[in-house]
Image (cartoon, rainbow, N blue to C red):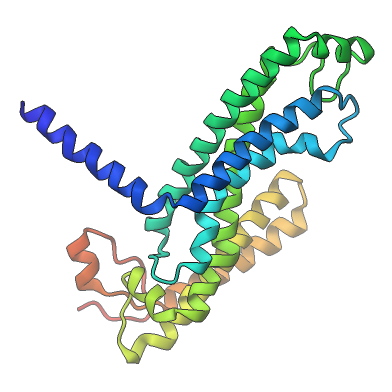
Amino acid sequence: MTSSGQKRPESTKQRGWLAENYSIPARIVTVVGVLASAWGLAAAVGDTEGENPVSWLMFIGPALAGAFPTIELAWHRDRNLSMATVKPRWFVFPLFGALGAVIVMGVTEIVMRASGAVAAAQAQDKWHYWFAEDGPSAPSIAFGLLGYVAGLLLAVAVYVVVLWPLQILLRPRQAIDENMMDTSEENFRRNRAALALMPIIVVVAVVIAIGLTSENTVLAVVSIAVEVALVVAGMALQRVDRKRRAAAGVGTGVEIGRKRS
């Protein structure tokens, strides 16, 4: 009885989180994106060369469905935009779009195969761009999973490149408070500057990865040097709210030049 009673509040809490964060517009975008993915797959069957832009709706549909709940935060000024709060959106909501896309694309694929359209397209070109004869047996599943990854990455990119900088620029006090930093006037400017470095640090980290994977030594070395400088600058600037972080069980991080109290 106790175990069952503990599970119910947890499930109720999860449903409450979904109801609060999964808005009606986001659900509409999900439905449209999912249906668009089916249209994309149907178009892809006849797109032997991969030149029809409609075919890309197989990925774009679920990607937009997954990213929109993060994108819409741009015009919701009352929302908490801290990474800890926004992060669940990146992983949960793209899942809805991807699962829906897998289902509708799976049904579409079954219909297209039953009608002989896929076989006819493969007979025309066995190296079909989307449905090669030696390709995956169920492309709709692979396309849906790629849509999930695309939605997750798009949501993260929108947050880092758009939402986070906008919050720091337009609502710096909210950003400082949500990140459990010292909200006093004395440390306002330095904490705002420290937060402004955070999106840049993330972007430079991506550049480092690009430099390493592409074996571009100059790009990798320069970006690593820039990253180190930015991190050190951030640690020198930031002044966190130690009491609040301690109460929340969050580490204080490194604060260069600040005496321990």
